[in-house]
Length: 299
Image (tube, rainbow, N blue to C red; front, side, top):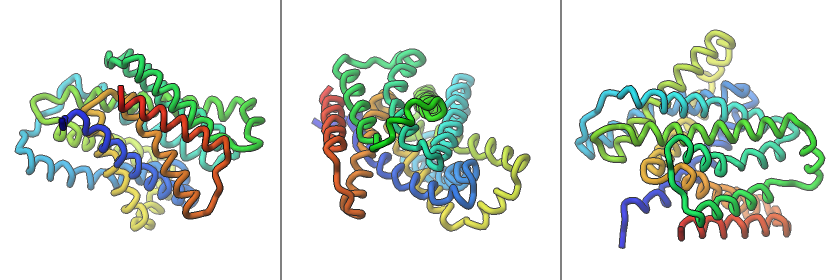
């Protein structure tokens, strides 16, 4: 029987696909714009699209637009500011020689999200779901490893960078879910869109003020590259819209664990587009991800 609560599964898969595309676009802009310039495009150019999404939702649902409550702001700021930090660290890692190692640690996000969700929101997870999260995380870490990269695990920088980025992404997911569930007297779709508008608004304001004060030339470069930035902004806003819809329906840990399927998408692209063969280690990691995701959905 169909259940609205089960919609978090397709919402998350669509969001993960959008995130893969957005990350690729942001990565291509890191060179000309720098880490924080490329970080800002997802917010600056995504914010107008979030307003469009919200307007469509309000017209469709007929919900009244509530004023933000006092309980809403701490959660929103936790989500918005943590995501800025996490995105900046991720993009910095993409230009670092220790990217593979940082990425491996970054994939501990799902486990950290489960911990933070339990501590701050009281999100309940069954033992089956906890097992699923651990198995899927081990699988994605295995697929992230590369030959010769084990030496970099002895370096402190990628370890700290990856774990802090993962913690920031985890806190961001928990913060945004906390903000969504305290929006009063509206449908879950409106609550998700409403939170997205405020989240992107805060992020755009914070990063734009920072760049105006520290590197105004980067803002000029962003405007000069408005066409690719607009596409990245739209893709990012669309992915975030579906992330928030999923957060409205289930624990953040469930969403971020299922989101690990993005590794399967990336492996598929590498195999079919670039003819990169899959190593036995990668096949084993993919098998663990599939098992973990299957247990998560079953549980």
